[in-house]
Image (cartoon, rainbow, N blue to C red; front, side, top):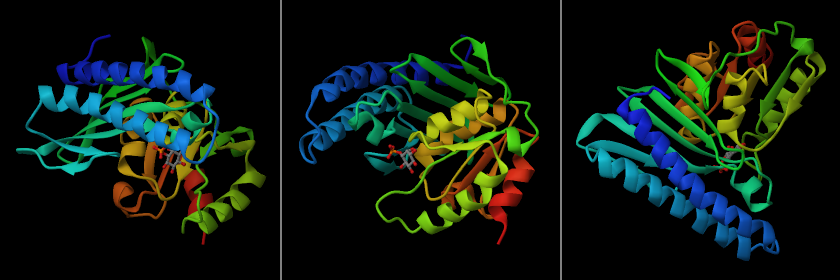
Length: 262
Ligand code: IPD
């Protein structure tokens, strides 16, 4: 694997956190699912994973800023660079013993994501990309799919839970999209949804109301695999609105058209 020093650092941190999560995941599978026990257990697991990643990354690059799901935002001496980290994307899957969750680490430079790692530790699949150098899964080069007909294509999304305000719009999206495509999947880890678009498994993905740490790394994977990304509302910032559309080059515009229809 040929990457920059920063990418190698990110991979090392993701693998270390992944090992800790896999160990915890074996135990969570054996726990009785009750509201309190495993919930607390999972938050311990992701706090520990974030601690590991932070120690590696901030230890090696103390001047970079930080945005992590568990510990929030910290400015660094270098205002142009920051790490954007979700130590455990797909927490609900993890809690239910479903092996579909990932560590997501992105490096932002001057407002742009330049390096990305999404590590599916349960399957030992490491997705990575650097701006201008392509996207990979382990040693394999990734390419978005070449399908160009909506009716033969599948798309992934996340359906907001717990009565979030983005639920009605998402249900409307589904009502518009499902009749014109081959299927919609909801696997529960945005970083992996984007990695699967990069790998050509899904033709596209969209979601409303997610956080920068859920998607930062995945967005670069899609772009470096030849895909397109944009906001759900034209002209808006993806991170600010938390709403995103990603797809292969053939279907990006058709997907936008369906999802942006008033
Ligand atoms: C969640 C997952 C899920 C998406 C949610 C996210 P988390 O991240 O990415 O797929 O639908 O919006 O919050 O909480 O498991 O890190």
